[in-house]
Image 1 (tube, rainbow, N blue to C red):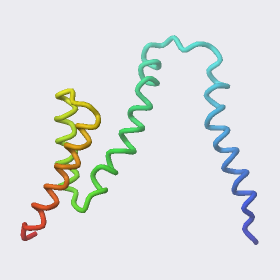
Image 2 (image 1 turned 120 degrees about the vertical axis):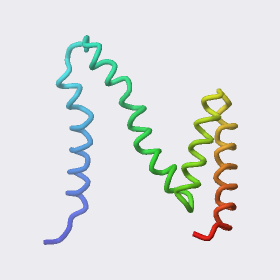
Image 3 (image 1 turned 135 degrees about the horizontal axis):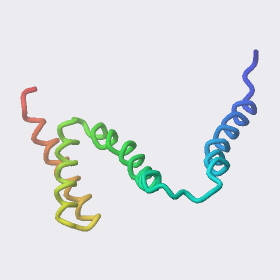
Length: 106
């Protein structure tokens, strides 16, 4: 059987449409439950963290430098530094850690 790209596109469009429209069809009234409201409030942040965290660890040459950069970024953000300062500090920490790891014998 020959693969037909239009069938794939149709299935993906239908899947995307169902995922977006199903919650709107099921929840016709306003959500009053505080638990569900708080759960839905944090969903975007959790999804973003779940997608970003593995990239932080595995985008460098070593997981160790990723962890060091992440720690420095958390520390700088906790001290309420600007986004640019946090990013530059994390990049500098990763760079320095990568250079130090070149000299270690493992």
